[in-house]
Image 1 (spheres, rainbow, N blue to C red):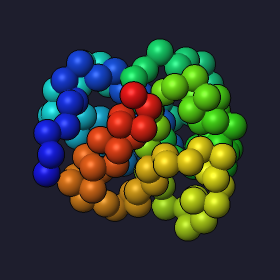
Image 2: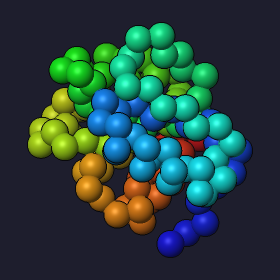
Image 3: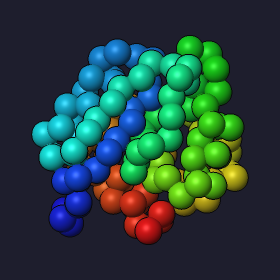
Image 4: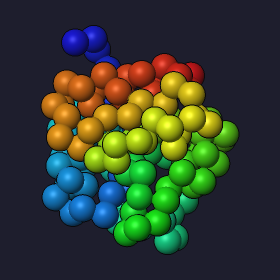
Length: 120
């Protein structure tokens, strides 16, 4: 696996499944991310992050419009989801990585690297 620059990253994790969110948070902390914030809904969330890792839906509410705004603003995105048709829903954000919630850490790391390359 290539060297992925996690050090110094400010990461927002948006997932309404607490165990998934905590696993993701630990994944980034273990790799040296500077700041990792976890939220379980879109309420009160700002976009002051280098990377946002999110599910397609939070509490039954779509995150696509929120993510589109981040994408337009140059924020790196990775969708971690169990939604089967996620690629179709995200057609307006070409190249944004989509990984399954049960993906290995290596797959997630590669998705993060791809997202960071896309936005730089």
